Image: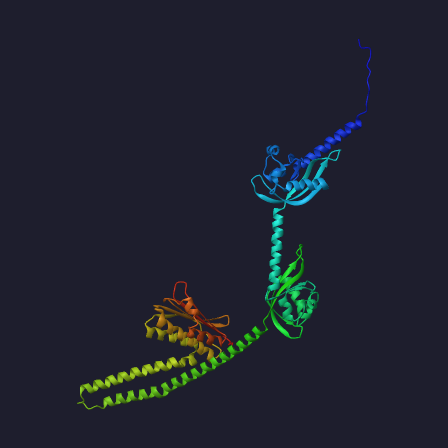
Length: 493
C-alpha cells in the first residue's frame, strides 16, 4: 500500500524556450525556403537531392516526386563539371560561379550559382546548399551590348563623315579620324579641349545648345566652322542628345560634313539660273516685240493692201460692160471671195500674234474672246464658268498669262480628244489664276515630268520669271487640269 511519493524536479523552462525558438526558427527557415523566388536546393555529396523549393523545380522542369530519382549530375550540360564542383567546394567551403545547366526537357540555359558546404562536428561535408539564378537573358543582353558597342566603334572610326562627342558644357570627349583630318588637329590637340574654338563665331555654340534643349535633335543644320589653319568652312551637321538614366542631357553626338564646295557650286548654279532666266525674259520680250511688229505690218500693210484690192475688184465689177461673159463675172466673184477669206486669215494671224484687246480691255476680256474663238475654230465646246474682273501689274505678266492660256488650248485641240473644255479666271489671295480643264484622255505623270517636254519647261520658266507657277495634273474623273498663277502685284526675277 503506497505510503508516500518521492520524485526529482528539474527546471526545463530554458530548454523549453530553446525548443520553441528552434521550432520557430525552423518554421521561418522553411517559409523562406519554400516561398523564395530564387531557386534553392540542398544536395548530398553523392549528388542526391535532399530538398529543393518550388522555384528550383520550376526552373529545371521537375516535380517534387522526381527528386528521389534524380542526381545533381543530371543538371549539368557537361557531367564532368560535377566532379570539379565537388573538389572546389570541399576545398574552399563555397562556390560562386557561372555554369551551363540543362532542364528535364534537355533545353540548356546559363546559371549563376552561389553554394556553401555544410559540415558536421568532425568537419566532414555532409551537404551543399545554394541559390541558382538563370542569367541566360542577361548574358545574351551583355553579349549583344558588347557586339553593338563593337559595331558602333567600328562605324565611328571608319566613317567617312566627321563624328564627335561633346559634353553639355562643350568639352570634346571623342572624335573619329575623319573629324581630326577635317579640322587639321591631332588627337592629343583636340580631345579634352573646348569645342568653342572650332566655331567661326564662338557665340554659335550657345545658340546651338539652346536649340538642342528645345528640339532634341538637329538635321542638316548649317554651321560655319574654323580649321586649325584658320580657314572657315560651311558645314551641315546632324546632332543627337546624349542623356543619363534620369533623362538629363549630358552631351551631344554630331556628324559633320563639309559642304563648302557644294555650297559654292549651288550658288554658282543659282547665278547661272538667274542669268538664264534674265536671258529667257529678254528673248521673250524680243519675241513679243517681233510678233507685235509682224502683227502691225500684217494689219497696216498687208491687211490694208488686201482691203484696197478687194475694193478695186468691187469697183471694177460695177464697170464691166453689159456684154461681159458670165464666166468673167464668176472669176471676179471667186477672186473677191478669196481675198475676203485671205483678209480674215490675216486678221486671225495678227490677232494671235498680238491681240490688241489685251492692251485695251485686259486679260479677262481677252480670255473670254479667245475661248469663243477656240470653240468656233476647233468645234470643241468651250465655256467660261467664272470670269473675275482682274488686272495684272504690268504688260509682260499679262502677256505671259495669255500665252500660257493660248498654248493650253492649242494642246487640247491637238492631243486631248476632248469634247468639253471649262475655263475660269479668278483673283484671290493676291494672285490671278487661269484654270483650264478638259474631259479628254488626260495627261500622265510621266508626260508632266518628262525632261523632253520642253514646252512645259518653257511655260513654267516663263511664269516663274514673274513669280508665278504652273500646275498640270490629271483630273479625278479623267482629262487634264492646267492652272497658271501670277501674283497680282508682280514678283519679277
